[in-house]
Every structure is written in structure tokens, then in C-alpha cells.
Image (cartoon, rainbow, N blue to C red):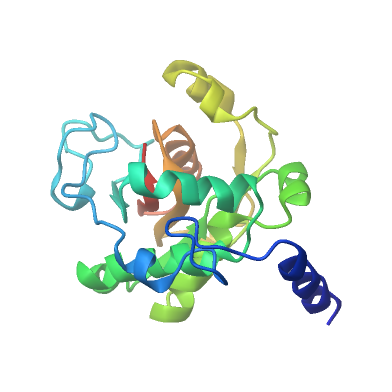
Amino acid sequence: MLKQIQNFVLDLIFPPFCLVCGKYGVWLCKNCSEQARFPKTQACMVCEKPSLNGLTHPICANRNCVDGILSSGEFSQLQPIIHSFKYNLIRDLAADLSAINLRFLKNGRYENFFADFCLVPVPLHSRRLAYRGFNQSELLAHAISEQFRIPVKAEIPRRIKNTVAQTALDRQRRKENLKDAFICLSPTEIKNKKILLIDDIATTGATLNECAKVLKRAGATTVWALVLARA
């Protein structure tokens, strides 16, 4: 009840306007959400060259990387919205961005491919979670779970290293920054399971690959990733 009152007061003081067209009352209106473009091609996580359905090319694959990655939208179009979601702490955008994920999955019939997977949101360090108040990846994961009845296993990998922001680092330093950043808390829960990692944006893929490495070493057989956009 208190949270509802707080949200009501905030909406009175700072009423939402669509971040794209300026329509009053919502952060992303239905029309603008439905105009989000799907990527023309998906790409291999390692070499970043086109790949059918985002599959990691066999020649590029290794035990410590994701087996494939899918992007729901285009970075140039979604980046300012995702930025507001994460850094302006507009939690309500979770539903709007999730709608883009869901439309993409339905359009490609990917929900059938992932039907026997478990959803694992990329975790935040406890300090960052306390500051932000929510894990954007977990909100996105739960929306997919509710729509397609795919189970969510949050906090299976835990972020134990409060890394600096990846955006400030080059590719090599991103890898070093994330070294030993995650541990797997419950290996028995993912042993012999297929995992779909959920995150908002992938740049070099260092975070997703580090998560995939930890999950595979704990017994996961397959690890894919779904992001809203790739930078």
C-alpha cells in the first residue's frame, strides 16, 4: 500500500511521458513499442559475424562461452530506453521492454526452442542491487516466465565481485574486470539443465560468457543468452 502511494505521488510530481513520441501517461506507448525493429541478422557471440539464430559458430565455440545469443531489438533504437530503465531507475519500463522481448520470441517461435530451458537472469552485486532497488534482468526474466511457463532460477550464479562499470573498459579489460566475479550457489539445481541467460544489453559478451563458464563448470549442459540489444 505504501509503495502504491509513493508511486502515485511520484506520478503527480513527475508524470510519465513516452520516451519516444512524448505521449502523456506512459514511459513507452503501445504504438512506439510495437514499432521496435527486430534485428535483420543475429550474430555469433565470439566473432560477431552473422550466424543462423545467433548460434556460436563451431569454429568459435569453446567450453567457456555461450552456445548462442539472440537479440530482440536494435541497439540504436532501444539504447536510450534501456538507459532510462537502468540508470534513471524507471522500473515501470520493465513491462514495456518485456513486451518487445515477448513479441520477438513469438515472432521467431523461439519459445518452443527454449521450452525445456531454465531462465537465469544475470545477477547484480548486492551493493548495486541495493542502490538500484531492482535487477533489470530479473524483471525481464520473470515476464518471459509468466508468458511461456519457463522456470526462473534467480541467484544461482551470484555476483561476488563489485566490478566497475563495463562501459568504461575496453574488451580485454572487461574480461579481467569480470574474472572470478561470479560463483554458482546451487550446482544441483542446474546440473544437466539447459540455461537461457537473460540480460538487457550485450557489448563484448564478457559478462554473459563469464556467467556461462560458471554455469557450465557447475554442470549445465547448454547455455544460451537473450538480450534486448547488442551494442
